[in-house]
Image 1 (cartoon, rainbow, N blue to C red):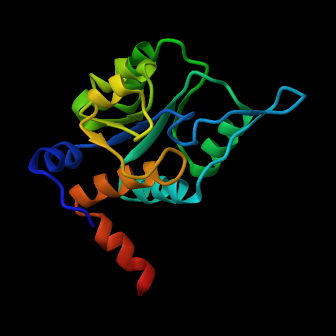
Image 2 (image 1 turned 60 degrees about the horizontal axis):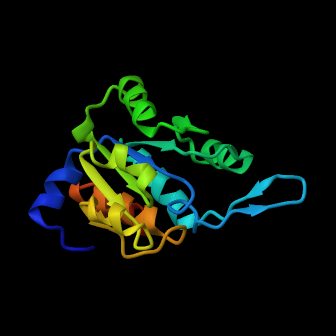
Image 3 (image 1 turned 135 degrees about the horizontal axis):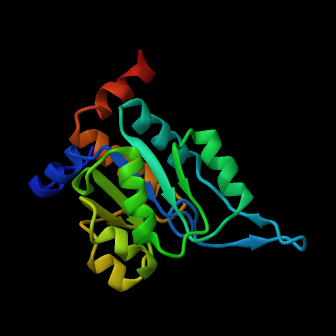
Length: 178
């Protein structure tokens, strides 16, 4: 487990909802488009299991994405993500709607983003995080920058960080070695 600064520990301990962008966060940012127009996206199993572990610990997950791809909807259902906002041009408005639907306050939300379109949520939430490949201006507004790259365990890293701060990570991991 990593050592968390007191500020990061405080922020992460309050999180009740993890909000994610998709392209460049849950995926590596590449968009594969078939001749039929269907989008194909590569998801990492570490991220998926991290979201499931986080949900089991009592922290909900949500997605706010600017695109509308069938593959993302399938992944959302596979992971049991309760809140899915797709084809969103105004992430600030979707975020306000999400807060109301989920019944959480801004300081109880974490958001992982990679580009300036994510900033309207990042500057308002309690724990803004970015991936290492994020645009430089986005990274400047992140309280945490993952060590793992986008689509390759970055989301799992944030899930683990939240669970660690809330004291639920080690007990969850210990269940696997009983």
